[in-house]
Image 1 (cartoon, one colour):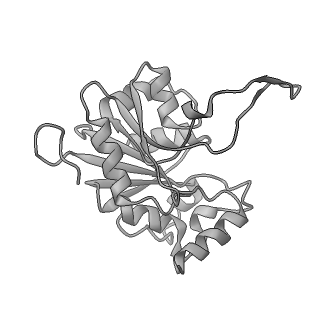
Image 2 (cartoon, one colour):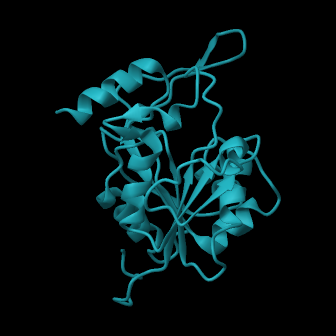
Image 3 (cartoon, one colour):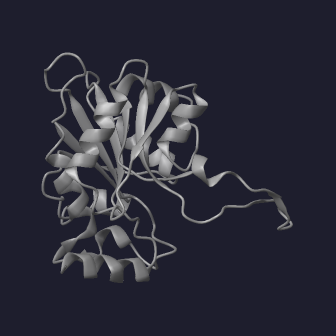
Length: 226
């Protein structure tokens, strides 16, 4: 568990694992697909549990209300998610105790994030004046901004671009305040940014790849047997 910056004492950290997606692009609930002999979500929860005081797993309502659903080992509680990712995060946040210092939000579809990455984002989020920290990796390809007709509008300097990952770490009070008006965004860093928060980027991990389609699962299975 990470230390509170400047105190030398363990920080109070809870993690929300977002596993409530419908898996439309994947063709099913990918977060419960078998990966290396267990479910994909179990990988993410195990790592989070090793660096957190508690882990909230947000799952589809059908699973949350099913007595036979197998709770991921290491999870503190499971809750039903909402109809959007942001709504699901808010469902998870409601289950996090009010006195927690830092909250990490992590996607179940990124099963290979390491404990070191969790610790790095919490440590960076705890720096003076910082509200949140997120992992990112440099963008190798040239990126174009296009309009709705497909016309190129601009070419950003790729040195300024990062492909963002999870886990993302937040000061809990800031994350709660940013979500108070029920905003929608593709990640929680964007919610905090829109609220005026100071977000920094730390180096991400190449293997912290999001499992989006069946080909990604094939890659993940290969990684498990390396």
